[in-house]
Length: 235
Image (cartoon, rainbow, N blue to C red; front, side, top):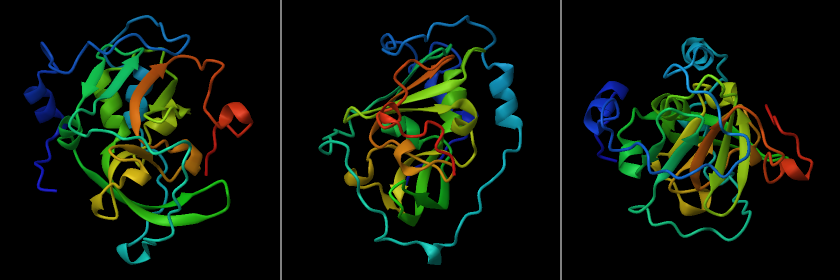
């Protein structure tokens, strides 16, 4: 896509995240319950250990295995219309550095590409190449507090879901903005969606606009989860 890929250190230096910060604050108050925690060290030990710990990797596939037509488009409501130039990803909750990231900010973070199997609870599957940034990069920039154990995802169409922190920090969990080497189509969640080989499809939110890190789940755990679907939904 002709973008310059920056290391996390370079991104911090350019954005001013370690000092005055162009990206911090101004993100509003979290709307979820039970998100107030005690401020501690910038990156808590539990999450630090997860970032450093080798987590079990899911086998990936080759380019020849990609199934371009197999990924079925499931819609929760009407596809939202999002102005990419005005789009901002808010990261808030129990964090020391709330974030307000444009797509340019996100695309300047280290790029990762993975070819994995997307598995739907309805019984179909598709091998897809996703490209984007590891979610753990975003979480690390937000500097989660010691209380964090869960992550909520909100989408532009009103969809919401929640994950455990370990799954969120898995090295194959991405916030994707590419599909099969091309810009992510709107129907598949552009400008930004979750993509991971460790969760069923209904956990992989599309059109993600807000990520909130919390210590406890509220009574609302996810759109489908609140209707009886399994919460963890691991593969």
